[in-house]
Image (cartoon, rainbow over all chains, first blue to last red; front, side, top):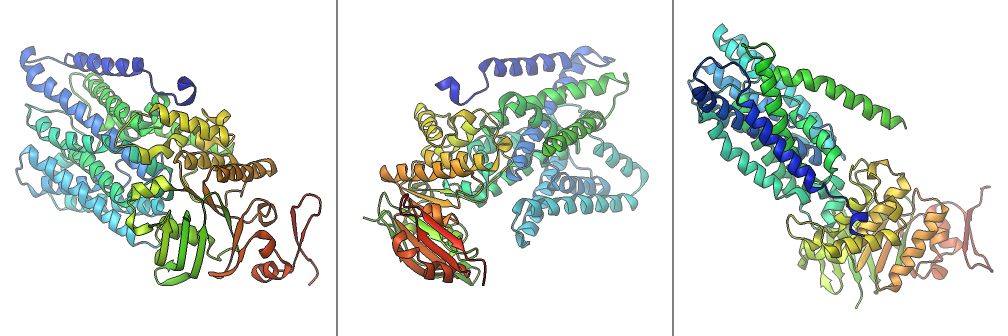
Length: 323
Length: 259
């Protein structure tokens, strides 16, 4: 009977996933040009970069899971609610203002911007007199994205060329690091957000069923939703501050993982964290190889993979509805 | 000791009063029906008991305990609900969906225990959804979705079951099976409060009926007391002809076409 009722992902799947993250991670240390002494390149450039990739991939994927459960929409991403626009606006204006900020500054600015954006969107949405909570939240998020992008453009318009270049470079997504400061500042934010989400996966399942059902099963929907939104903003905001608004990870990874572990967030969240690590390491290695010895920004690589993927997703979802 | 008793209940949303002066008592193992036209306050009454965003004054007791004295989790172990609104696009399987009903019995992150699986299996067998167990919820028909959610409400092992128009979008067979199931549950001691538009069919299964009209209680009693031409015609604002078939004891309620 136990096999007949609820299918759980097998332990083989988990072992394979973890092993491939380790294997691909180890290989990525040796991918790309090695002009300097290899030891220095690996220890000071590649290893911190690998850690940054692990953090970015897991944070954005898990943040995507959270948004998908709250909005009850598999096509939601961490950026749907303007999280990236907020992070981008604040981090971007820090760059424009010319403050020479340590890396921590950008991570903090990104986090603050993301949280601000989420709070703003949330307040706007709860003011609305709509029955359908999700759609108001979505509309407010889209507005946030548009307005945030234009304000950032406005800043750029009034700043000089070198700063603009810096912003544009950041917007493209930048995984290149020298030394450990960037990944190390990101670690506490990502771990905190990750633990918060991992402890709420059962609640995410309930919320995904509908507010009424979740409430009558003893879930304080409002409080839990705020906590989850804040965690998602922390995860995505700090990452965006550090590496720029890299797209599609939060959409693609949960979608692929659903095929393997199903829609139960208790398994989908950890699987997405691992899958996100794998995807970002792969994409980052690719970005170092395509036009070697130069490298492509990871944001561009990711969008070039992710764009077509998203289209296929949309078309297939549309086809299903007709049935 | 009644499973549910409601005294002098007024309820509404943001100052708009929807229900006035409602009194109701259901003893364990009784099925009580809520009947009335659209907008008469049936759903609001159910939502008041569940404290789902309704402003309430008056007294609501569940198993002799004041509603306000119960924690969310205690309440979830006593009362479960089949709503009209749910996420129809959930990608969980049927078995996973039913297992979610076990939430009030869990703490934090936990695997499904053997008892959870057993209860879920029993509830799926009862609701005739066992064969659907590996299907994805969003791919089910509207009627199947309702049955699956009923199974998950049963997995909560409630003393009191609240159903908001459970029969809508069910076909004849499943409608009948659902009422038979409610009867079976009531024999096990579960009390049921159910809002319904299937007035004629429900008459064979209900122990008592509360007829609501514009937020007020219009009549209360057994179906034989309440299902009369005069009461139902007045409440539903059409001329209805009400009779009971001698042989099958089933109710026949038909509108008279000519005015």
